[in-house]
Length: 354
Image 1 (tube, helix red, strand yellow):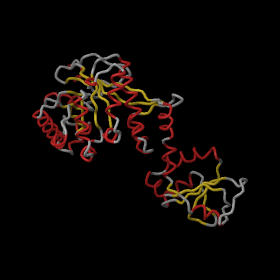
Image 2 (cartoon, helix red, strand yellow; image 1 turned 90 degrees about the horizontal axis):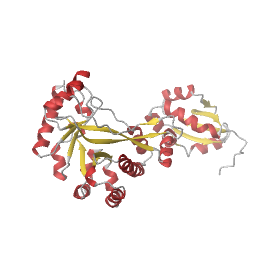
Image 3 (spheres, one colour; image 1 turned 180 degrees about the horizontal axis):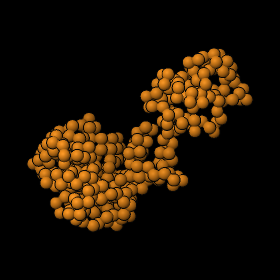
Image 4 (cartoon, helix red, strand yellow; image 1 turned 120 degrees about the vertical axis):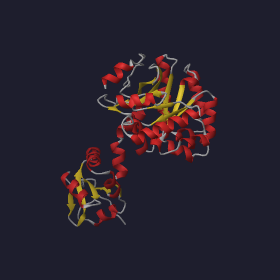
């Protein structure tokens, strides 16, 4: 039976490091060995300092070390049996450091601080804008930091809040599109799980689109995490229903590791996107050139246009144009901005400026 520990006892963070290296790093952060149990480290701290301490730990230790090391917080004396009893309830260090590390994401979600930048998508033959991709961003509650789309996704995944993030991002994105007053097409990123896990997705999305005065034909849902498309038996039917309502579907090709015919065994996308890892360097690397040529040929035989993202280098841009890639986006063409960019490309200037 455990005895109550007086509240006058100082608060202690106890950690069992997973390796000598972790022990060394924690020692440099001010942790000391527990006198009676040398395998454990401790640091006396105040309640309001815990968040800062865990933040330091999350920034100093690898994800693996945070998962393998264990911690507890106690007021028990360092030389008492109660401390060891308290440590029986120790949890992986990562259970707290992940939450602390991504505490900013919880504030973004709660305060709905998302906004969107728009990156033009160009017709690579004629050089005019044919659509915009909506790229999620967020600012901190003090407006002293800006978070990228990848940081937002990482935060959502780490805290198991992808569904909540998807719902907020989609609603905010559609509102932002309506605020532009544009009748152009907009690519909106969407996780397949957001469709599969929400039975009311179609109904809710269609109603919001109508309420905002938009048209389904303006929205091209870009499905990310494409490998999961092949593991959801309900997705093909749902995607077909989405397309029947007038929405478009674009998918990434997963760097060429998933054959294009896999998509068409289940559903028919409206656009195939060549991922930036395949596009980058395609103007120089023979293997990437073969992959791009094969994907473009296969897609065109099926009547589906191809979009290359991540176009930054002039040789990559020229190669994609020469091989018949239909659309392109990337810093070499135009950077994302908070406002819509309407100007057509001057190919001579684009290719000579790189």
